[in-house]
Amino acid sequence: MKILVTGANGQLGSELRELSSSRTSDQFTFVDIAEMDLASDQAMHDFFDGKQFDFVINCAAYTAVDKAEEDSALAYRINAGSVKTLAGICKKKAIRLIHISTDYVFDGEGNLPISEDAVPRPLSVYGKSKLEGERHVLDMLDNAYVIRTAWVYSTFGKNFVKTIAKLAKERESLNVVSDQVGSPTYARNLAAVVLSIVDKVHAKEVDIPGVYHFSDEGVISWYDFAWFIAQTTGARCRINAIPSEEYPTPAVRPRFSVLDKRKIKKNFGISPPYWYDSLKECLSKLDH
Ligand SMILES: NC(=O)c1ccc[n+]([C@@H]2O[C@H](COP(=O)([O-])OP(=O)(O)OC[C@H]3O[C@@H](n4cnc5c(N)ncnc54)[C@H](OP(=O)(O)O)[C@@H]3O)[C@@H](O)[C@H]2O)c1
Image 1 (cartoon, rainbow, N blue to C red):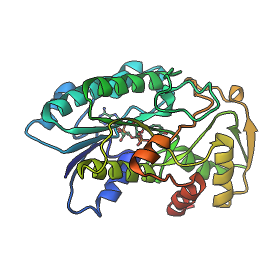
Image 2 (image 1 turned 120 degrees about the vertical axis):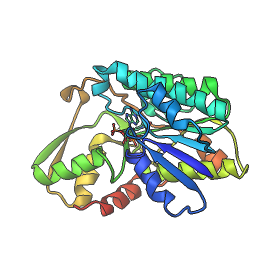
Image 3 (image 1 turned 90 degrees about the vertical axis):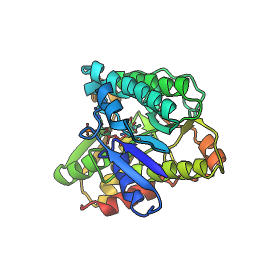
């Protein structure tokens, strides 16, 4: 298979790059902003000119959730405009698109795991722009996959796990919000899931396109997550639970972000790992 991965230097892209090294029969192409700037339609068309792929895995995104509130034009361009262009190219070239989206398309007002057909109501520019991107994919391609995920971390890039692991070593105490709950996702697990979908679709074993939810298993608050990060890294730092009101951010986050994963489990036979096992695996790879 010929597989193109965008956002190759990000968390998910980097995990896919690592996993790709053992897949010698597939030809992977990894691109980030230097190779194909998603801010430019021309750059996108130029990149694809004369090239063909079986799959595009779109991991690229404008992921700075708070910055997006001020920088909405660029957030919409990357998370929605470029996705429309990419979906158009995939349609023209008959390339299968796997697009990654987010739990932030929901308002988090419920208290039960959120299914794929729940009505989205994003609270932030990031969430709104990602929702628009999803809609372009689903409107333009009837064979694409949109995988919504949540609370992504890995050994690569910047993320909550790395930030808390570092701060817990340096500080005596940390305040972390305890009224936003969700399910962390180790990007390595998501990368494996994406490749397992690619394999099953390519082998014509399973091919049921549409929206899917994936995260690791289990439900915690950011406070719990921080507590376990500090505990597992042996930091002496005290983790204090605080309400969101005491940690104001430019972008409003959903309070309840737990995704219902039954569809991906049933259709693709996926068993998400428990979040704490994943956390331990990730931390063991970080120097702490
Ligand atoms: N991180 C999370 O907690 C989370 C949660 C739910 C869903 N998701 C979704 O999961 C997917 C992967 O997220 P991630 O955490 O791997 O994101 P990430 O680490 O921020 O990686 C995104 C990549 O996209 C690149 N990119 C940004 N602007 C670009 C442009 N103009 N042209 C080309 N590439 C550009 C970034 O490059 P630069 O670093 O140079 O900007 C970065 O390498 C995204 O769709 C995201 O929306 C993430």
